[in-house]
Image 1: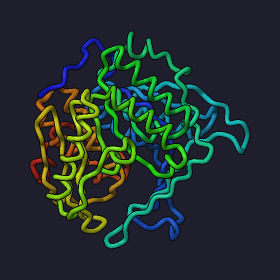
Image 2 (image 1 turned 30 degrees about the vertical axis):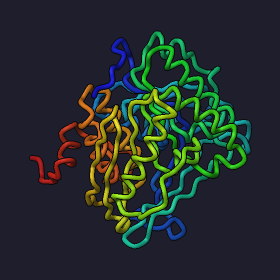
Image 3 (image 1 turned 90 degrees about the vertical axis):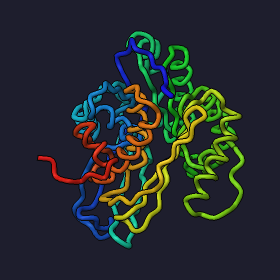
Image 4 (image 1 turned 90 degrees about the horizontal axis):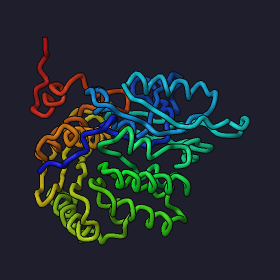
Amino acid sequence: MKLTLRQDCRYALLVPTSMGVRLTPESGQPVHSSDMFRLQATSAETNVASVSSYLGLPVKVLTTFVQGSPFAAFIKSNLRSRGMDFEGPEVPQGGPWGYRHQINIADSGYGARGPRVWNDRAGEVGRTLNVKDFDLDRIFGEEGVQIVHLSGLIAALSPGTGEFCLEIARAAKRYGTRISFDLNYRASFWKGREAELRSIFSEICSLADILIGNEEDFQLCLGIEGPEAGGKDIASKIEGFKDMISRVKKQYGGAQVFATTLREVVDTNTHRWGAIMLSGDSWQVVEPREIHVLDRIGGGDGFVGGLLYGILKGWEDGKWIQFGWASGALATTFLTDYGQPADEEQVWSIWSGNARVKR
């Protein structure tokens, strides 16, 4: 199976996002014991887009910036270095207690000590994302986009960003852009807003071509009946996902691709990594294989990025999940939470298990 894409497009991939910074202690140390930290620009959605941008496809980011902020300047420089175009309004800070870019504070863990993440999102400028700040007819009509990737993290960030994502999905549909949606359920975002967000998520899913999420995502975001209680072994998880997706597909029949990752944590630096995908009526499964992990954050985004890259390249669907699996595995070898593939060969070498030196 292949997905047909618009060809008269300036951009292969478009991602709406809220950019922030990540602080990571040196040498895998925990946050509370550290006084030396590495700073990087971050967002889940640009993590996804990095696979395509590093491999030479044109990518655009829609976001907001704090006017005059040195962190905004740092983020813009980083996006340029990753080969990404961006646009978005400059929002005045409004004083010391006004807007800022979110801070993600995360150690990578080590061995038996798992990683810990602390999100500091008060005053996040991304909560102001508004469709009025973007000319969607220009972006989708004149410039053209092959795939727009939406995330439940942005759709649930604020009442305004939910409507923002919904309007982007509607505009994409009008102009023939394929829509990818990663549900990314977060309980803290949904608390007290269940009815509002379920309505928004359901409409986006009704417009989407590609749906990504685990069993919890589909149950809690869409109210889809979950699998029967059973064993937690991989075979049970795979069958549970298949049962779930069969029900999702009945309700959201417009989507043609459904996918999720499978992960068993042996210890912080050793995982068993797999994936499962339904494309059309064909199931594709990558049984979990052992990978060595430097920093796990961004592995799932790398999978989605590799999957979308395969679709954008016009490959057969069997290669989508393989490249996605390998792109996710690649991301876990970087200190950044996004993978930076040198070329396709590097990714395919990971898929084939070839870690020999290339001279």
